[in-house]
Amino acid sequence: MTLLGAIIAGGEARRFGADKAAARLNGLALIDHVARALGGQTDALVVVGREWGGLPSVPDRPRGGEGPLGGLNAALHFAHEQGHEAVLCAGCDTMPLPPDLGLRLAPGPAVVEGHWLMGYWPAMLAGQLDRWLDDQPDRSIRGWMRACGARMVAVEAAFYNINTPEALAQAEAALSSVAQSR
Image (cartoon, rainbow, N blue to C red; front, side, top):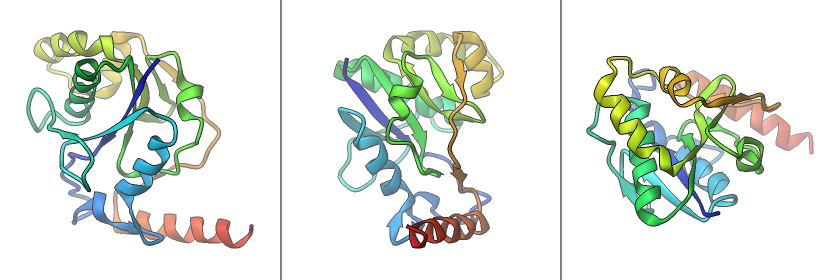
């Protein structure tokens, strides 16, 4: 089975107040942290919602402004078009990702409990998500999870969802203290 790693990076970052994907954590852009983590457990990567560092990229689908589901939909279609069977998906602002995240979530559809965008999605769901987006006023990832029967998987890990500069500072302090204790 071939697995596509998808980094969802098309958000507006209103709470962050700047380009969140490019913000630095321990000297590396947030999006690069996620690319490294996903790249180690997938066959290929794609950035959804923006261009970044020479990686393949696709716009949200069917258009921008659909929120995380527009990113997931684009990733599913790209995976299907490129011959991948599934997508391991994460936002550009959530870390650290476990090195065995895909194994923990497979088979999909499945998401990390409390981190609804972090998931394992069969590429064959692309058409179903298209139809759901056409018919549903509810654009929530949780609504889509219910519609497609996604499992929620408890993952014992401390994730940082970096939506504000303060959250970035907290993550940097926490990760630095972990590194110093080793």
